[in-house]
Length: 66
Image 1 (cartoon, one colour):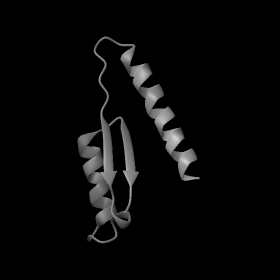
Image 2: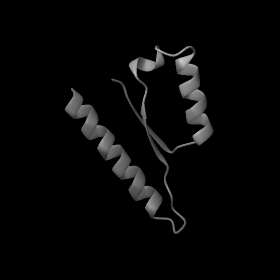
Image 3: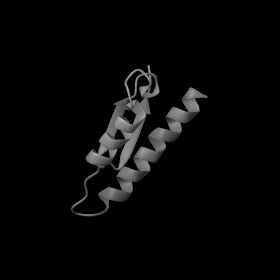
Image 4: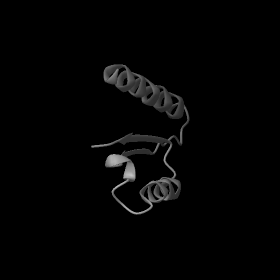
């Protein structure tokens, strides 16, 4: 299960990079975010995470939790 999800994520990122690199001015913003127990350990954690992601405006977001 984890391996399948990880490989799908790697393939998705690879395809996104290939598509974006076909343009001269290509750039891609990737955010890796450790949400630490789904943001539940901080008051309004999920809302704060969502606000930060919207502020940064990444093309791809990879979230993991510990």
